[in-house]
Length: 297
Image 1 (cartoon, one colour):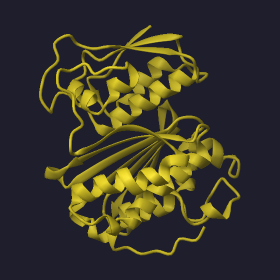
Image 2 (cartoon, helix red, strand yellow):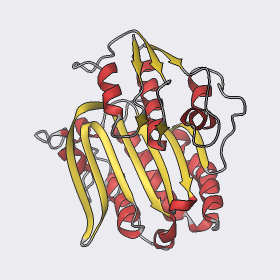
Image 3 (cartoon, one colour):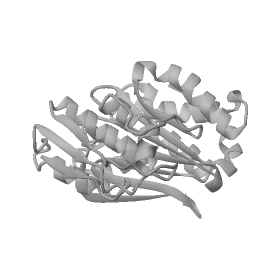
Protein backbone atom coordinates (compact mmCIF):
# COMPACT_ATOMS: atom_id res chain seq x y z
CA UNK A 1 0.00 0.00 0.00
CA UNK A 2 1.30 3.46 -0.91
CA UNK A 3 0.20 6.78 0.59
CA UNK A 4 1.28 10.23 -0.53
CA UNK A 5 2.14 12.88 2.06
CA UNK A 6 0.21 16.16 1.74
CA UNK A 7 2.25 18.90 0.03
CA UNK A 8 2.10 21.02 3.19
CA UNK A 9 2.45 18.82 6.24
CA UNK A 10 1.13 20.50 9.39
CA UNK A 11 -0.79 19.45 12.48
CA UNK A 12 -3.97 20.26 10.53
CA UNK A 13 -3.22 18.48 7.25
CA UNK A 14 -1.95 15.34 9.01
CA UNK A 15 -5.48 13.93 9.32
CA UNK A 16 -5.75 13.19 5.62
CA UNK A 17 -2.68 11.00 5.88
CA UNK A 18 -3.83 9.36 9.11
CA UNK A 19 -7.22 8.54 7.58
CA UNK A 20 -5.45 6.77 4.71
CA UNK A 21 -3.36 4.70 7.12
CA UNK A 22 -5.77 3.93 10.01
CA UNK A 23 -9.19 2.28 9.53
CA UNK A 24 -12.41 2.92 11.46
CA UNK A 25 -11.54 0.22 13.98
CA UNK A 26 -8.23 2.00 14.67
CA UNK A 27 -6.14 -0.67 12.97
CA UNK A 28 -3.53 -0.16 10.23
CA UNK A 29 -4.99 -0.61 6.75
CA UNK A 30 -2.04 -2.66 5.51
CA UNK A 31 0.87 -4.71 6.82
CA UNK A 32 3.32 -2.78 4.64
CA UNK A 33 2.95 0.93 3.88
CA UNK A 34 5.10 2.98 1.52
CA UNK A 35 5.15 6.69 2.36
CA UNK A 36 5.72 8.86 -0.69
CA UNK A 37 7.53 12.14 0.14
CA UNK A 38 7.88 13.32 -3.49
CA UNK A 39 5.12 15.96 -3.38
CA UNK A 40 6.20 17.42 -0.05
CA UNK A 41 6.85 21.16 -0.35
CA UNK A 42 6.62 22.24 3.31
CA UNK A 43 6.78 20.62 6.73
CA UNK A 44 6.65 22.28 10.12
CA UNK A 45 8.28 20.98 13.33
CA UNK A 46 4.92 19.55 14.40
CA UNK A 47 4.84 17.53 11.18
CA UNK A 48 8.20 15.93 11.90
CA UNK A 49 7.09 14.83 15.36
CA UNK A 50 3.72 13.61 14.04
CA UNK A 51 5.39 11.54 11.32
CA UNK A 52 7.75 10.02 13.86
CA UNK A 53 4.83 9.24 16.15
CA UNK A 54 2.96 7.56 13.28
CA UNK A 55 5.98 5.48 12.27
CA UNK A 56 6.43 4.38 15.88
CA UNK A 57 2.72 3.54 16.20
CA UNK A 58 2.86 1.45 13.03
CA UNK A 59 5.98 -0.34 14.25
CA UNK A 60 4.14 -1.23 17.42
CA UNK A 61 1.31 -2.64 15.28
CA UNK A 62 3.77 -4.82 13.38
CA UNK A 63 3.55 -2.76 10.17
CA UNK A 64 6.57 -2.38 7.92
CA UNK A 65 7.01 1.26 6.84
CA UNK A 66 9.03 2.25 3.77
CA UNK A 67 9.97 5.67 2.41
CA UNK A 68 9.85 6.92 -1.18
CA UNK A 69 11.73 10.18 -1.70
CA UNK A 70 12.58 12.25 -4.79
CA UNK A 71 15.75 11.46 -6.69
CA UNK A 72 16.51 15.15 -7.20
CA UNK A 73 16.29 16.84 -3.83
CA UNK A 74 16.15 20.63 -3.62
CA UNK A 75 19.02 21.99 -1.59
CA UNK A 76 18.96 24.69 1.04
CA UNK A 77 17.40 25.30 4.43
CA UNK A 78 13.92 25.78 2.92
CA UNK A 79 13.85 22.30 1.42
CA UNK A 80 11.45 20.09 3.45
CA UNK A 81 13.42 16.95 2.60
CA UNK A 82 16.63 18.63 3.77
CA UNK A 83 14.82 19.78 6.93
CA UNK A 84 13.71 16.20 7.63
CA UNK A 85 17.18 14.88 6.94
CA UNK A 86 18.82 17.50 9.15
CA UNK A 87 16.36 16.59 11.90
CA UNK A 88 17.65 12.99 11.70
CA UNK A 89 14.23 11.65 10.65
CA UNK A 90 15.50 9.47 7.79
CA UNK A 91 18.45 8.32 9.88
CA UNK A 92 15.97 7.17 12.52
CA UNK A 93 13.54 5.35 10.21
CA UNK A 94 15.45 4.11 7.18
CA UNK A 95 18.86 3.89 8.78
CA UNK A 96 20.61 6.46 6.60
CA UNK A 97 20.65 10.09 5.53
CA UNK A 98 19.45 10.83 2.00
CA UNK A 99 20.98 14.24 1.27
CA UNK A 100 24.60 15.04 0.50
CA UNK A 101 25.42 17.10 3.58
CA UNK A 102 22.97 16.46 6.40
CA UNK A 103 23.65 18.12 9.71
CA UNK A 104 21.77 19.09 12.83
CA UNK A 105 20.93 22.78 12.57
CA UNK A 106 22.05 24.97 15.49
CA UNK A 107 18.47 26.23 15.85
CA UNK A 108 16.99 22.75 16.32
CA UNK A 109 16.91 19.93 18.81
CA UNK A 110 17.12 16.87 16.55
CA UNK A 111 14.32 14.32 16.56
CA UNK A 112 14.60 12.27 19.73
CA UNK A 113 12.74 9.45 21.46
CA UNK A 114 12.95 10.01 25.21
CA UNK A 115 11.75 7.47 27.77
CA UNK A 116 10.06 8.82 30.89
CA UNK A 117 12.82 7.27 33.01
CA UNK A 118 15.39 9.37 31.10
CA UNK A 119 13.31 12.54 30.85
CA UNK A 120 14.68 14.33 33.91
CA UNK A 121 18.25 13.94 32.74
CA UNK A 122 17.33 14.93 29.17
CA UNK A 123 15.51 18.05 30.38
CA UNK A 124 18.29 19.11 32.75
CA UNK A 125 21.05 18.54 30.22
CA UNK A 126 20.16 18.48 26.52
CA UNK A 127 17.01 20.60 26.58
CA UNK A 128 18.13 23.22 29.10
CA UNK A 129 21.57 23.60 27.47
CA UNK A 130 20.01 24.04 24.01
CA UNK A 131 17.38 26.51 25.21
CA UNK A 132 19.98 28.47 27.16
CA UNK A 133 22.06 28.85 24.00
CA UNK A 134 19.06 29.89 21.90
CA UNK A 135 17.95 32.53 24.39
CA UNK A 136 21.42 33.63 25.52
CA UNK A 137 20.42 33.35 29.16
CA UNK A 138 21.95 31.28 32.01
CA UNK A 139 20.63 27.72 32.39
CA UNK A 140 19.72 28.29 36.04
CA UNK A 141 17.05 30.83 34.99
CA UNK A 142 15.14 28.12 33.09
CA UNK A 143 13.91 26.16 36.10
CA UNK A 144 10.25 27.07 35.54
CA UNK A 145 10.34 26.15 31.85
CA UNK A 146 12.06 22.86 32.65
CA UNK A 147 9.38 22.12 35.25
CA UNK A 148 6.67 22.84 32.69
CA UNK A 149 8.08 20.34 30.24
CA UNK A 150 8.54 17.88 33.05
CA UNK A 151 4.75 18.09 33.36
CA UNK A 152 4.42 16.91 29.75
CA UNK A 153 6.46 13.84 30.60
CA UNK A 154 4.31 13.30 33.68
CA UNK A 155 1.30 13.30 31.38
CA UNK A 156 3.07 10.86 29.05
CA UNK A 157 3.63 8.56 31.98
CA UNK A 158 0.00 8.90 33.06
CA UNK A 159 -1.66 8.54 29.66
CA UNK A 160 0.66 6.57 27.38
CA UNK A 161 1.35 2.85 27.33
CA UNK A 162 5.05 2.83 26.51
CA UNK A 163 6.14 5.90 28.54
CA UNK A 164 8.15 7.22 25.60
CA UNK A 165 7.88 10.67 24.04
CA UNK A 166 8.98 11.83 20.59
CA UNK A 167 10.43 15.36 20.68
CA UNK A 168 11.56 17.93 18.15
CA UNK A 169 12.17 21.68 18.59
CA UNK A 170 12.92 24.60 16.29
CA UNK A 171 13.91 28.18 17.10
CA UNK A 172 12.72 30.93 14.72
CA UNK A 173 14.80 34.00 15.73
CA UNK A 174 13.15 36.24 13.12
CA UNK A 175 9.71 35.42 14.54
CA UNK A 176 10.73 35.51 18.22
CA UNK A 177 9.36 31.99 18.54
CA UNK A 178 10.45 28.56 19.68
CA UNK A 179 8.21 25.68 18.62
CA UNK A 180 8.52 22.47 20.63
CA UNK A 181 6.52 19.43 19.56
CA UNK A 182 6.15 16.39 21.81
CA UNK A 183 4.08 13.31 21.16
CA UNK A 184 3.51 9.96 22.81
CA UNK A 185 2.07 6.79 21.34
CA UNK A 186 -0.46 4.53 22.96
CA UNK A 187 -3.61 5.42 24.88
CA UNK A 188 -4.59 9.07 24.57
CA UNK A 189 -5.75 11.53 27.21
CA UNK A 190 -9.51 11.07 26.59
CA UNK A 191 -9.63 7.36 27.43
CA UNK A 192 -7.86 7.98 30.72
CA UNK A 193 -10.00 10.97 31.67
CA UNK A 194 -13.18 8.99 30.93
CA UNK A 195 -12.30 6.67 33.78
CA UNK A 196 -13.34 9.55 36.02
CA UNK A 197 -15.69 11.45 33.66
CA UNK A 198 -17.18 8.69 31.47
CA UNK A 199 -19.59 10.83 29.43
CA UNK A 200 -17.08 13.31 27.96
CA UNK A 201 -16.28 13.37 24.25
CA UNK A 202 -12.61 13.44 23.28
CA UNK A 203 -12.25 17.22 22.91
CA UNK A 204 -14.09 17.91 26.17
CA UNK A 205 -12.04 15.24 27.95
CA UNK A 206 -8.82 17.00 26.90
CA UNK A 207 -10.25 20.32 28.06
CA UNK A 208 -11.19 18.73 31.39
CA UNK A 209 -7.66 17.30 31.75
CA UNK A 210 -6.26 20.83 31.42
CA UNK A 211 -8.24 22.16 34.38
CA UNK A 212 -6.54 22.78 37.71
CA UNK A 213 -6.79 19.86 40.10
CA UNK A 214 -8.11 17.37 37.52
CA UNK A 215 -6.30 14.07 37.10
CA UNK A 216 -7.04 10.57 35.86
CA UNK A 217 -4.73 9.17 38.52
CA UNK A 218 -5.13 8.93 42.26
CA UNK A 219 -1.52 9.92 42.95
CA UNK A 220 -1.26 13.30 44.77
CA UNK A 221 1.66 14.11 42.48
CA UNK A 222 -0.76 15.12 39.75
CA UNK A 223 -3.21 17.23 41.70
CA UNK A 224 -3.09 20.89 40.71
CA UNK A 225 -0.25 20.37 38.25
CA UNK A 226 0.00 18.65 34.85
CA UNK A 227 -1.38 20.40 31.80
CA UNK A 228 -2.81 23.28 33.85
CA UNK A 229 0.66 24.27 35.06
CA UNK A 230 2.04 24.10 31.54
CA UNK A 231 -0.76 26.23 30.11
CA UNK A 232 -0.58 28.85 32.87
CA UNK A 233 3.14 29.35 32.37
CA UNK A 234 3.34 29.21 28.59
CA UNK A 235 0.08 30.97 27.68
CA UNK A 236 -0.75 33.27 30.59
CA UNK A 237 2.79 34.28 31.52
CA UNK A 238 4.72 33.93 28.26
CA UNK A 239 1.87 34.89 25.88
CA UNK A 240 2.67 31.78 23.88
CA UNK A 241 0.29 29.06 22.71
CA UNK A 242 -0.39 25.37 23.25
CA UNK A 243 -2.17 22.94 20.93
CA UNK A 244 -3.16 19.46 22.11
CA UNK A 245 -4.33 16.68 19.78
CA UNK A 246 -5.42 13.35 21.24
CA UNK A 247 -7.62 10.70 19.62
CA UNK A 248 -10.46 12.68 17.95
CA UNK A 249 -10.06 15.80 20.10
CA UNK A 250 -8.18 19.07 19.74
CA UNK A 251 -7.74 21.81 22.35
CA UNK A 252 -5.96 25.07 21.48
CA UNK A 253 -4.93 27.51 24.22
CA UNK A 254 -4.04 31.11 23.41
CA UNK A 255 -3.76 34.34 25.38
CA UNK A 256 -7.01 36.30 25.54
CA UNK A 257 -8.08 39.56 27.14
CA UNK A 258 -9.26 37.78 30.29
CA UNK A 259 -6.60 35.09 30.56
CA UNK A 260 -6.31 31.78 28.72
CA UNK A 261 -8.79 31.16 25.90
CA UNK A 262 -9.43 27.49 25.14
CA UNK A 263 -10.99 26.22 21.94
CA UNK A 264 -12.07 22.57 22.02
CA UNK A 265 -13.05 20.87 18.74
CA UNK A 266 -13.71 17.40 17.38
CA UNK A 267 -11.82 16.17 14.33
CA UNK A 268 -12.93 13.45 11.93
CA UNK A 269 -9.44 11.98 11.90
CA UNK A 270 -7.92 9.98 14.73
CA UNK A 271 -4.55 10.73 16.32
CA UNK A 272 -2.93 7.68 17.98
CA UNK A 273 -1.77 8.92 21.37
CA UNK A 274 -1.27 12.58 22.27
CA UNK A 275 0.47 15.39 20.41
CA UNK A 276 1.36 18.68 22.14
CA UNK A 277 2.80 21.73 20.41
CA UNK A 278 4.23 24.44 22.66
CA UNK A 279 4.98 27.85 21.15
CA UNK A 280 7.20 30.05 23.33
CA UNK A 281 7.56 33.79 22.77
CA UNK A 282 11.25 34.59 23.12
CA UNK A 283 10.49 38.32 23.47
CA UNK A 284 8.45 37.54 26.61
CA UNK A 285 10.66 34.80 27.99
CA UNK A 286 11.47 36.77 31.16
CA UNK A 287 7.81 36.48 32.17
CA UNK A 288 8.18 32.74 32.45
CA UNK A 289 11.75 32.51 33.72
CA UNK A 290 10.91 34.89 36.55
CA UNK A 291 7.62 33.19 37.39
CA UNK A 292 7.64 31.40 40.71
CA UNK A 293 5.17 28.83 41.95
CA UNK A 294 5.33 26.34 44.75
CA UNK A 295 4.87 22.88 43.26
CA UNK A 296 3.36 20.35 45.65
CA UNK A 297 3.48 16.73 44.66
